[in-house]
Image 1 (tube, rainbow, N blue to C red):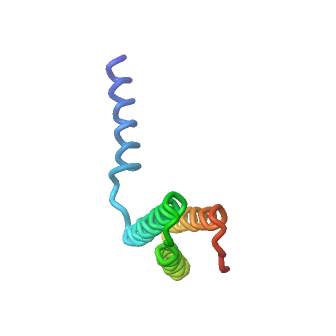
Image 2: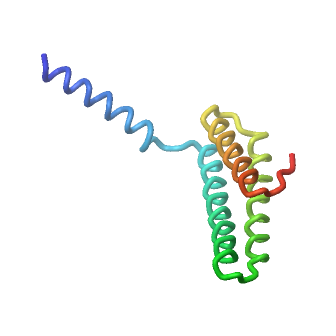
Image 3: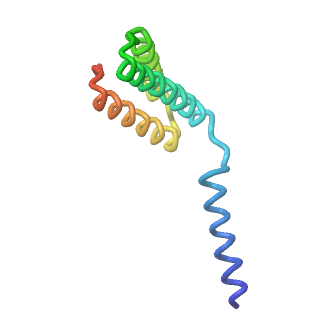
Length: 114
C-alpha cells in the first residue's frame, strides 16, 4: 500500500511538472513569449545605459532613447496582439506582461501613453 501511494504521488508530481514546464505552447502563447523576450532585452538595454551614465558620466542618451523606442514598439505590438487573442492562457500571459511594462515605466519615470 505504501508503494502504491508513493507511486501515485510521484505520478501527480510528474504530471504537474510536465504541464508547468514542458507542455508545448500554443501559437498565441509563443507570440506573447516573443514580446516578453523583446521587452526583457529592451529593459536590460535601458538599465545598462543608465548604469553606464551614472558610473562614468558618459552621455548615453541615444542608448536610453533606443531602449525606450524598443519598449514602446513592443508595447504597441502587445496592444495589437491583445485585440486578437482568443486563448485564456495567452490572454493571461499578455496581461501579466502589460502589468510588468506599466510597473517598469512607473519605476523608471517613463511616460506611459494609454
